[in-house]
Image 1 (cartoon, rainbow, N blue to C red):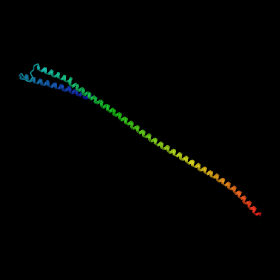
Image 2 (image 1 turned 180 degrees about the vertical axis):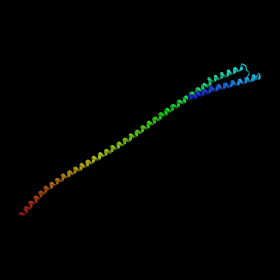
Image 3 (image 1 turned 90 degrees about the vertical axis):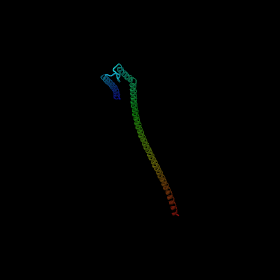
Length: 184
């Protein structure tokens, strides 16, 4: 931008001086022709009017420079600076937005991973709890079966003992009847 600004100023100054140079050369050529031809009352007479015209033109250029060209170049410079600042601000905001988007996407991905881990862990814990409950139920069932078996064995032994006692009693009873029948 600085190079463009310098180039515009250089082009403006160069064109102004070039215009003045051409005007002066044109005036000098016309004066030389008038002097050679020796006529008076031509387009340019070599009198006090010519230097006054040149002074007027130079004053006009200076006034235009201060009243028109400098304010216009200042406005253009301000506009260029405003655009440049706006672009840098916009690019900074865009970078911030990209960074925030990336951070939020990373945080979202991390949250999803954590949620998946929590779900997996909860499922594993639930399976472990179910397995423990099943194992406990199996142990309790085995315990109940063992107790029932033990009770059955105890009842069986009692029944056998009772039967043995009854067999003994009955055998004694049969024996006593047989013995009493034999002696009669």
